[in-house]
Length: 358
Image (cartoon, rainbow, N blue to C red):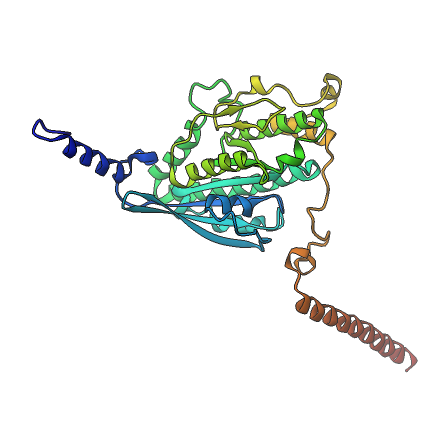
């Protein structure tokens, strides 16, 4: 508060100090540094690393395939204060979902946000990927909040309240959705390919993505690493997750353009029904809205059984972990093992035959 004796320079200096104290974006006015964790998961080769590089201003660095888990960090200055964002990326699509539980623990729930990145150019894998990852993440989040409630009930209640507030107590769909327990952003990548799909297919995928985002009360946006405007939009959203920076109210729901819908701003009425005819709808038996949309989507885009990996689930055969020297040695050991099995089998048969002849 300024005094009458203050000069205009005193007032200006006080304002600068006040802003440096962290009012920009944080809303707390605190000069204390903050730490946050942003966890990326999603379709294999969808562009997760590329999004992280844009967030970190590392556009000139070519992305590499992520093996299992990778860590990075970023800093954001507020005057003399530097906030830190810890960024984790889960590779392998749906192959390593068990690793999600490493990060969704009671100790970091209050500072954790999730980013689900999906490949719009692969509709035959889209539902399976988002369902597997969201189901696992939700299970671990609910469990971690319940564990937190045992020792810090107020903190657990606050997390539940924040999830509800992302939709709003007055929203007409309050009884029809199930807010994700943590802040969630869903990014549909490879829009440059997706935009060339048949218009009806684009609409079916877009409507389904809108429903999934709204049901989880998540922010949804479509993006492409070949379109700078969309990448900058995605970067702003990630900055908001990491540093609580201000983000303008953007709403783009035209199915002929890249979608951008912020959490809690959509509605089931605006989305409309699943992308199937009334006749087909009558054949679908579903116990919940989510199941109805799932069956409707799969009727149009049957889901592939294999998520880019061997059906036997052997990680050693997964192409993302290919190493020439290691693979050559593995092949040699596999051959030796097979020879041993044949030799041992023959010896066992000889022993059995020998025992019968006595």
